[in-house]
Amino acid sequence: MNRRDLTLGMVASLALMPVAALPFARHLARRFDVRDHGARGDGIAIDSAAINAAILAASRAGGGTVVVPRGRYLCFSIRLRSRVTLLLAAGAVIEAADPARHPGRYDVPEGGIEQLYQDFGHSHWRNSLIWGEDVSEVAIVGPGLIDGAGLTRDGPGARWKAQTGERPLSMRGMSAREIAALEPDWERMIGLGNKAIAFRGGRDIHLSGFSVLKGGHFAILATGTRGLRIDGLTIDTDRDGIDLDCVRDVVVERCRVNSPNDDAIVVKSSFALGRAVAAEDIVIRDCVVSGYDMGSLLDGTRRTAQQLAPDRDRVTGRIKLGTESNGGYRNVRIEDCSFTHCRGLALETVDGGVMENVVARRLTMRDVTTAPLFLRLGDRRRGPEGTGVGAIRGVAISDIDARGIDHRFPAAIAGLPGHRIEDVSLSRIHLSYRGGGTAQDARAMPEEHASAYPEPSMFGVLPCWALWVRHAERLRIDRFTAETATPDGRPPFVFADAPGLSIARTPLFRA
View 1 (tube, rainbow, N blue to C red):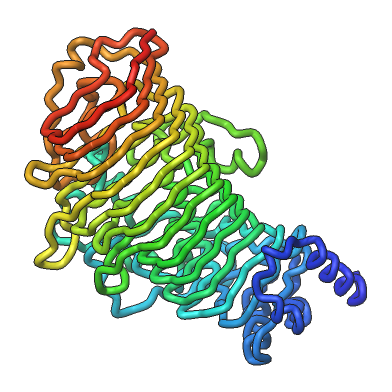
View 2 (view 1 turned 120 degrees about the vertical axis):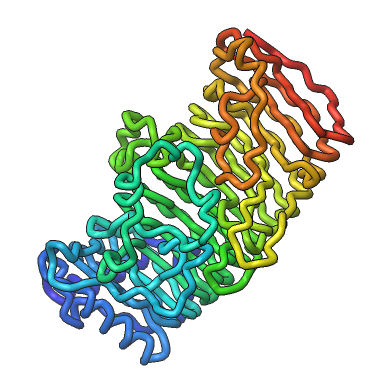
């Protein structure tokens, strides 16, 4: 292909893209083809140095668009810079190189970071396929693919002394060798990449149109980032999809995220920045999340052979607030999303943060692998001395249609003695369960598990089948319907320590 053909191809790629996918129009005035800087795109040569040279040239010119034409570009770390749009043309693939097979390694994880209260993956950004630190006016756009073939999904856990609540209770039976396989030592991570895209800080960042396959620990990790827009991505990955940690002013919309082994879209407020920072002013809308077999969303087969995630619960793939929750969450809206073959919506704060003003509405769920709704205020306190118990208040959940739910997991709202969840409303909720609970299940007395890692399975099979509430104040329920496909020997509701409970227009249907 000659240079004229390449130029025409770039123009065609730009012309076909919607205006919303080109957030910084002035970047179009200067275009930098990565092949002009030595990229081969043959899937054999290591092209990260050439792509980094093109990004540097665009930044030094005052901004520009770095074009990655059709081809397969084998890369180690790509370093984003301010005022640069990275355009992945149709047929362009950036593939993560594997240090075990290819000459080179990923950028070394940052030093001087206290990995006390969050794991290795949350604590580092530079050990990624594509990363940016304190960048502004940056975009990655286009119909191309980021293939994380050479990334690892693993990394060591937090160095928190207590360790209580570090892992889900479903992992209690795992041996030290099995845990070590998932959480290798820090030294073993040097030179490896464990994220597809990572941002530390930064503002005015747009990600649009491309796909990610096998993104490592995080397909996208944004920590302390402001003004982030993620639109129209397809992510089919082996661990977390989109992680929004300590962020502000974020919109995630029209994304498809498949992640059977971990969460699909998750909001966190960890201690990764060395202080407690709230995640706030976040909208997640028109998204589709799932727990199909990894890779089968992108290839269209949507297989469901995998039944268990690495934590030994059923496959994940959900939208969640938590688990890292030091800074809390404010003003979060989740709307018009669908969940398929995955866990349901989880709203959790266990590390001292306050969750308030959260709205979840117009959600559909099919083949729900654990609880369709799970609200948990816990007392893990993974944080510095003085970390207390947080709070959940002001949560409105409405227009939920969930079907094919595992009978073991009713919707659950679980606070703590002396620390009730406050002012939650459930309206226009319909839940359809598979049924099968027994009269013996109805006699269960779930432990508090105050310091445990929060998951619906932490309480075991619950003593009711539709809605279980413990330690909640001023809960309002309106037009809540539920049914079971087969008989269930438990009552539909259990309410314990729930002063101010209000129930209106709530018929129940059973098989």
